[in-house]
Image (tube, rainbow, N blue to C red; front, side):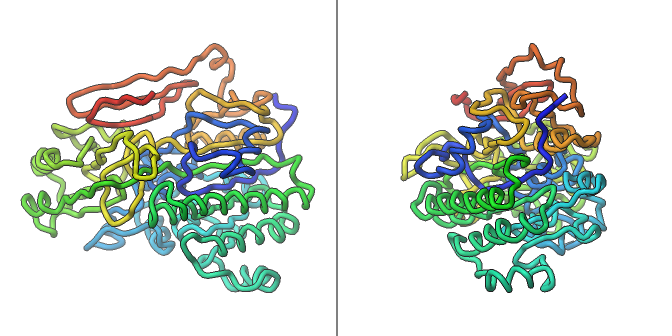
Length: 482
């Protein structure tokens, strides 16, 4: 049983922060936090590696097949029968919840509220992302400070003291600094929430527009670190630092887009627009059939496989067959009423971009760098934890994942972890043994292992620890990196 337990949590998410860019020079506050806490050297996002599915997984400790969200952009005919929808819009999240029953799985915030606690969200991310971190926020009256989701009444005390919230920009320095000050100067000392989530939309925005490792993107990372410093100073000033578990994470990694994929010729050759809905997600593409047909899907997979840039494909949702040339969608735990009939990941390599950073990929759309695929560079994400109950000054080599955050946080707070949170408690980083959700004795002699599953349809690299498997990379080409 843990004797040194936190009583509250600060969760900071840097959207799109790849962990190999953490350094004392570029990110001094984050590096120092790692020096005094635990750095997870093998943390994993879920596939497809886009923001909203990983935000939902972070909040619920559950995969897509449980919380119901398959990607950022997908087909939901009950919301829009003509085209894919972007779940970046908060209204869409509400409509999806009503029409499809998604987001029903309990979140960290739900459990905290059920135990008499309060959550506050401060976010420069999209409406949809902020919403799904706490889908029942409005129902329970928890605070959100967000450019468009907050009401005028919620924003008024912040505007009166900090001035108007700055407009969005790239990099989003001014707005994020304003939000960091809102968290540090008002939310922490006055509301003193049990859970504060601060979602920082950079470096994602800057990397999309300027590329991975570009000077503007690096400036966005420096800014994120400075804003982390503001929030940490606010914790100190409020007298809350010693009792707070501090978590800094990212939702996914990143790759430079060096080539573009156009799937429209294949779609046009096999079906008209009335039958196939194509939903691009950066370095992956979702295909939804209005009238699912296994033969049509197999023909589509056969033709897509001929295109340069198409890597591994997945099918077999809602009890349907896994068509030839694809892998089972169950391997990435995507299922449910919104899941695509075919999910295509794009080709990638460990090559250098023109700024000498590894990780390049095909992409769809106009972004100079992106994510969404199944490369090691996109799946590998950031996780650093520091505070009471956490071992100090260690680097944890066993694999872990964004799916593990919710059960770990709740267990450390001494709260019961819902059965739907299938992630594991990260015992290897803790000074004691939380009493909830897992049997640490089963892990005492456990060792991590990395193994590959190879078939004519693709190679999957898995990492395994504590009875849980994490997908580390997927490719049709040989996997060279460990």
